Amino acid sequence: MLNPDARSLYTGAVTPPPGYIFDQAIATTYSLDPATLLSLPTHIALAERPSATPVDPIRLLESLRRLSDRFTVYIDHTGIKLPSGSNILFGLLEQMVIPVKAPRGGVFHPKIWVLRFIQPDLDKPALIRLLILSRNITYDRSWDISLQLEGQPGGRYIAANRPLGELLQSLPSFSMQRVSKTRRLQAEQLAEEVRKTEWELPEGFEEVSFHVLGMDNWSWSPSSDRMAVISPFVTDEALSWLSDQTEELTAFISRPDELNKLSNESLKLTKKWLTLDEAAETEDGEEPDQRDTVGLHAKVYVVEKGWWTSIFLGSANATGAALLHRSNIEILAELKGKKSKVGNIEKLLGEDGLGQVLTEYIRSKDIQQPDEEKVRAQKVLEAARSLLADAELKLDCKKDNGAWLLTLISPRRIKLPGISQLYAWPITVKEERAVDILDLCKSKIAELGRYATESVTGLIAFEIVTTIKNMSLLVVLNLPVIGLPEDRDDAIFKLVLNNKEGFLRYILLLLSEYSGGFISDGFQFGRGKGPMSWADNFSGETPILEELARAFSRSPDKLADVRAVMNRLKRDQTTTSVVPPEFLQLWAVFETALSEVGK
Image (tube, rainbow, N blue to C red; front, side, top):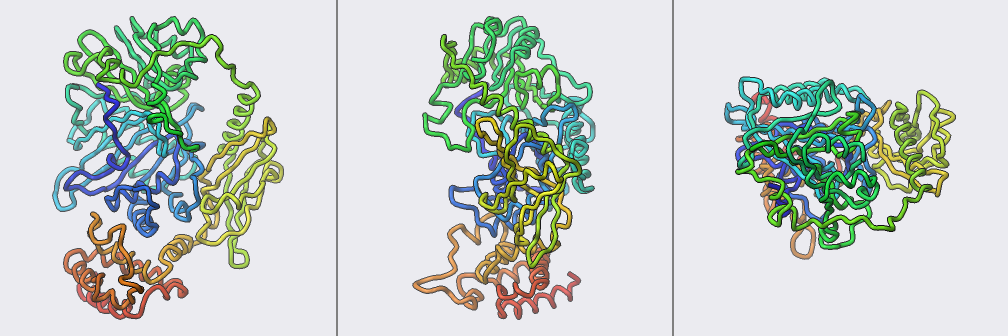
């Protein structure tokens, strides 16, 4: 039923099936690490598996250029994490990441991916891949769960898909900023196709349906004979409600610290309380990275009713905000099958299921009480984060002595009770550039300093410091930018292609077949003891003439990409040093040939 030894990776989930290419995608998440998001378009565009080594910035640049208009991430407006390092390419994520807010005042919490793949040379329907997850778009190493379904849109609407389609179509309306027409149309198109897609189900299951909480009048009631729950977070009121939905609450799996908070009365609702084995939580007991989240994070409800077993999985924790008050936006997918084919709760908890990684929870008689001051400080910080995210801040850019003066502007005074310091800086630069902007609360304006064109971004990091125990909280907000430099993307482009070798690699990347192959991670611009001259690349190890000729005869659109690069470089005379005269002469021949064939 649920096998802890079966692992899946984001990179595998977004890889096109054989014969298909990526067309577009929408993802939703509660939290996001920009560094994680930066690696995913590279994998999609170039079919490369990220390794432990830093990702080639030239490949990142090209993948973002190819996918930024077709890949959209909707995220809770307080959910962007501070990445572990700065990167000027983070600025190119601005348009892809859309901050949204749950209409009922809770958090935007669904984790889904809808990917559309096509066969460009065949007149066949697109392939839709749906991922229902408990994982956010981060580097967390927690125990999560995912469901992957695929299918092709047909000619009729499927009632079970309606809640999912309505969620997708509504996403732009949750945005705190203006959403472009292109992305609104994308949401409408994918919603329409999802409504008509018949999914291929996992073996043994006969039905799939979707439950969206926190929108309109959609409801969820897991009425059952028996139920087992997996949820990292749990509250007394939600546990009582779940107990009322079933004749027998057979087992509950959660985190020890969460179970320690439950009342003694709640602990009587089931006799089987379980947690992840300590070694399983941290992958054989290894020390977790400071920025990682480890331990249980999956959300699953297994219910038995008559001859049937249903598995509900997705984003909804066993909390009041998710299940009772429906203030959060959540999603659960329901897989239904006969117990004889898909198993039951005993199989879930057995040694062939999760039993091998579970241990019995026994409440200690001397539970350490939480530090009240620390809890109060955390609440103050989270309240301040919400106030900042709701403040409708904007970033103003003005040219100043060859640089750009960045200024935060608030339409009204912001009150941040209990906050002693407030720092801010663009995530494209190091944290050392942070400045204290607490005056923003009084004057509605605060200068961040002067920055180079390529560093300008609306992705602004904030460190909020409270007067209580000097605790702090980090958050990144994606702010609207007034006066974004028109040549910002060109400046990033120039910085990445900062020499002739970089230019050559980028041109070859445009001309290659994008499935790996010609340019490998180990590609070197040199041989023997000394560097290879650029002219050697026309006839030596890098046959750029042959690549241009092949593209002209087989894929002229690739030469249009090269033309766009040349036009971009021509706009800034200081970048012409990266383009050698030999290439300019060669390219002039192809420009003439393209004109003669009307390209």
